[in-house]
Length: 379
Image (cartoon, rainbow, N blue to C red; front, top):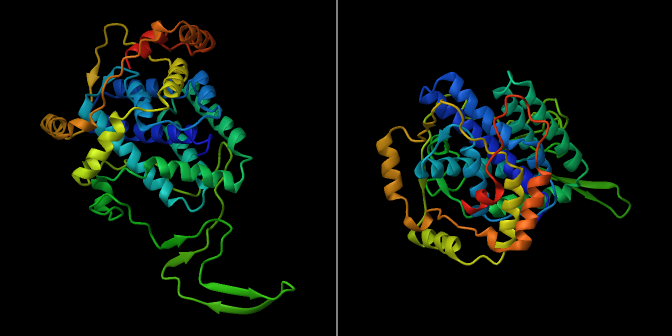
């Protein structure tokens, strides 16, 4: 398992979350100023300087439950609220979209181009906010610094770690089913056509060499696809043509998207067992959450402006039905963490809070987020 996977997983899933929320805010005719504030607040939290610095440190990839907790906090970083069914659907859409993108990456290193596409598109959502644009550009520069020198083998390990994370998720998405890139069982259909990876020749030819390294024979074979050479390599700079389209916003055209949990009761029970089984890495996961959430500045709703609820379903009735029909064993239970009982942990969290106090926040930022100990108690 690669210790460099977490930042790419978080940023790509966060990008997909922003795409979906942007589409739903427009579909529900939320006033432009409120919609803009929601996206800007989430992006501010997501790209907080201290948070990104903590995220980029080498660390193991943690469980789906731990990451889901981060996105619950992130989605509620502004005046928008999601109930459990809508949050479940949001997370399902995020994970299946990224799984499809990772599967389709022509070469392992292109996972980084997918990340850059997400960040480039996010910048399109905040063109009128120079302070936020600076935060995203700074994250791009740090990604280039961290990942620019990695070998092909290290990127292969990152891609394999991502695929391992997604391997048990087979949720049907109406958009993928309609485009015939997903089967009714929730598994994706991989194409046998299109550009081959950059630097790779189109398949169909076998060359044989003698012991002097000279070519002595060529044999052609039918490869069963319709492949073409890659036109050029995508740019790995802060600004440039990524060439690869994976990671761009597939909701830019207003299309209804539904999710359906697929699989047999055996699959559901196995997922439930994973959810409730004791986790030997529980202590490390709590440390992970403490450090990451210590860098997250969750904004409180201040002033007279009321919050609003966003529905990821077409109607409230559909949302209520989804909440009723979702298997109970797949629900996300609340975990109470009594951090005050551990003096050493208390000191560690206090140290983290001190390190993550951001002094150079933009003028339009709201007051500091929740106390970290209280935040962990609410998980």
